[in-house]
Image (cartoon, rainbow, N blue to C red; front, top):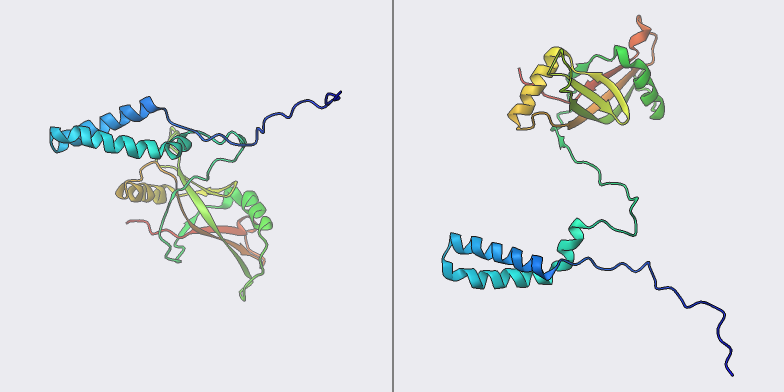
Length: 209
């Protein structure tokens, strides 16, 4: 007489991912819509052939279409994709100096996180990608532009700089959008007359006049 196994039956492998799939009704509806659009743009006799072709294309690519909208259940905690912002062209002139006096502590922390050796003039320079974020909820000034590097706010554009930068955003159809540019953090290692402004930030921006 055979002994019954003491082990429970193996559970189905939950690690195998099921391919997401779009329903046939959705495929037919979308194909019909596309066929009607094509027929309206060309000739009514093209509606049925166009619908059939669209249906075949949608059906053969149904897994890819569905996968674009369905998150991966195997890794629900995956980090979201990084945001992509418009980057201003680099001129390497670093002509825009922002007021850094109120943000010396934050800039100092940023400098300590990124150590470098001084150049021949005794100055340390560190280069970063800066985020230029319009601030639209200021009740006293609707042109404010904040400058962030990493997790640190390192300053704001001056009133005149912010007005000109807003004009630049408008000219590029980027109004109220976050953009990026290169920035240099300058640390004066020699004793300064005013020790409160040991660190400075300059942006690689070409502002309109």
